[in-house]
Length: 295
Ligand SMILES: [Zn+2]
Image (cartoon, rainbow, N blue to C red; front, side, top):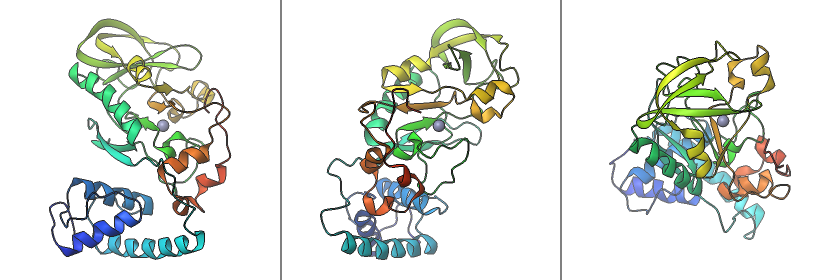
């Protein structure tokens, strides 16, 4: 079993194999460090395995199979296909654990830098950034609340923890207010924030706000300054539908996208190679063009 701080020839082989598959475990030096652990987690997520960053028998077997497939794909595709020159890796960013949320998640490298900029400001002011995850596996099931062309597949979107707002405005890390037709403004509690009285909406009271007071940062504004946009609540949310339609927690990075020109497929190819994408559900929607209000 290979894990953080393992050393030796087996670790070197693991690193070489992960590199071949495009996972970037760092230099193949035989030392299992954090980069190698990140690569193992990403590989496990992609394969639908339990993502603990430990390379045990199951993970090593899946790795062998993935390598065999990879070699076959490469022979089939020839040497010109599959690799985009401006591919960006997924990198790990920190979050503040809240309930069953995460203390880290993965974003595309440039998106991670923009997120880190927001996080630094929030943490500096004594606030928190919670997480319900970000990157979605290419083989994740599609459902009414999980769009087939979600920004989550491309490493451009993140979700704050869905339980960290709209529950108890007097205590939650975030207070959510209405901000135009089905749009939200998210305020983060922070010791060094501005004293405010806010009209908080909750899952239990979706149309009639109640007052919440405290010191807050305008988190929506901080995300917007860093290139992230919010999305609207589903209509059903206000008509007695599931709370999952609220979407106040979702922020997506839209820098670099050209309306009616950029395609979902282009964005997938920024983070995955062709061999990985082929035959996955999202790849079927590769020709989808982004509109003005990305859907
Ligand atoms: Zn989301």
